[in-house]
Length: 114
Length: 418
Image (cartoon, rainbow over all chains, first blue to last red; front, side, top):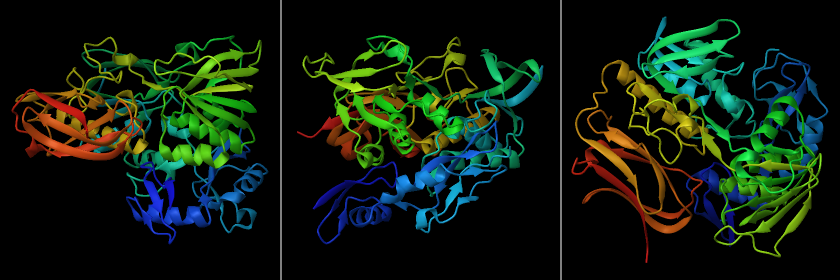
């Protein structure tokens, strides 16, 4: 039996997982999915900022479009810190495609005109 | 003098959500006043995700969440002024503001919603013993510098207070290459959400020192050392428990305070939250002046701020349409054993809609308790909670028919199982 705190949403359910990967204590199905992932292959959504070519708005916030394998988080940060984006930029614009070969794109999370 | 039906002070999530709701209720003469050069307030620097699960049923980052609202403000052509600092509000609802493109402006409002958010408790306010070197910041300041301007304020960081912004910054600064040495929390439990303890501290092996606080900061020009020590139940330092850290930065995440300055001189009473006392429609003691969001009480989630702001928007629309009579039976809400505060503080039952929403926090963590909401002998609601902590606000929606107008007081209290 393993005990976890669900991080899928701020509710923070207290989850219990038995040896057959049966999850209890979850308020919604996302909790069960999280618990199984966490014990087999943990993933996290990465959020950071990326340099822009603007003086007014020198950073643009970004996120991984899907959660990344936990072991790739710092490698993905290195990639993000190498890039400078040109404005204007819109929410969802891809700034790095297939980061670290994960199949996941890094996308902008803010619309910045200049 | 220019006249407006509704003036909203603050263009963050509470201000925008209340404006949109009032607009949906048919109020068209609205003006939002925002001091920053952009709408969205604090969400501009909250680049992490976890927003929107209640409001939009999907997980968004702060900037994405606020853009949903600012796009609707533009689309509905709701008027707003940026870089506009509100100087005063008078009892007869004259709002005075200034900016560089209009100068000093006075507006006569029929209704006002105060949505000015909260501010962080500052280093000076908590009287940290030791010298006064540079390198001591509030967590929100460090967040602004890093997320909006790209400056990392330090390389070896200690964090005092386990509030959510502090935890979020522990992760954020670690990702950007800083070493976060630890987080100290005065209380025996964390002030932040459980999920943030897991994904911001445990993920990066950052230790959390409960029942610890900073005993001394050292350093002449720049911070060089932070000394923490354990405290007993009365918060006195326990000798011999000191731990010293080589740190160049101390971040404070030691509480948020509603920013009520603008209404502090009006004839308005305040609650323990340091926000105004309000009715079920988020109306303060001055008819037509409403308050919602973190200026009323500090929320855990922006989703809750938005839903409260919508209540204020609906309330303001009701007021403008002459539907807030302040007649009939009035309840005062009384927080009893184990309950820190209850919002609203008063309910005008005749004015209330079909559903009455109560929000409250417990004073400390409890396990296996019942929470009672009662007027005299009439049990309005009993809620069982297997586990409850102060950092997670409870929201209870009650059908109006449950209220019998038997007493002037509604008690909300915790009963522990024997």
